[in-house]
Amino acid sequence: MSIALTLLVLPLVDLATDNPDEPILDQLERSGPQIFGFAVSFLVIAQFWGAHRRLWEMLDDYDERLLLLNTLWLLLVVFLPYPTARLFVEDASHPDSAIFYLLVLFCISGLMLLQAWYIARHPWLRRESDRRSLRDQVLPSLGTTATFGFAMLLSLVNRNAGLFSLLLLGLVQRFTTNRDRPLRQPDKLRPWSARRSPRWRP
Image (cartoon, rainbow, N blue to C red; front, top):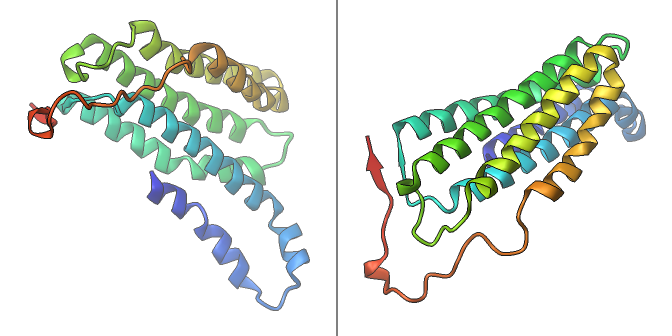
């Protein structure tokens, strides 16, 4: 994930070196859509990274199916800067790029939902200290996926309305994520040698 975030800045580096004699303010004005697209991509990927960490940090094991879902998820996350760049350079009167952008977000969130569902259905993959209910594990990803789906459908009617509806994500996460207690519980009762280490489950 950190590599994907780092790669986002490379197009901006190219813009900065295309015409080094251009005044900085003119260059920033000319590159405004690309810079805004970079900021949006960074924030969205960082949000997905946080959701991924909360899902995976309580795992004690994994198998090939879960690894496949995670690989597909990473593939779309790394691909996300492309539809984001298209979104901010396209004429606002055409909704194609907005729909494509929201579709990619929907697929990323959907793969996260599949991972959460798979982990919830296979409790032996989780740590013994993980006491989260099925609701706590699946509902955050379900709410995010539903929001992206709603935004995509809304963008078919009005491009800007579909994009601005993404602001609902903050409200959705507020009511679907349990923030009352930390997910990681300190493992102080057992000696280090007695703690379980991740195993490969084919």
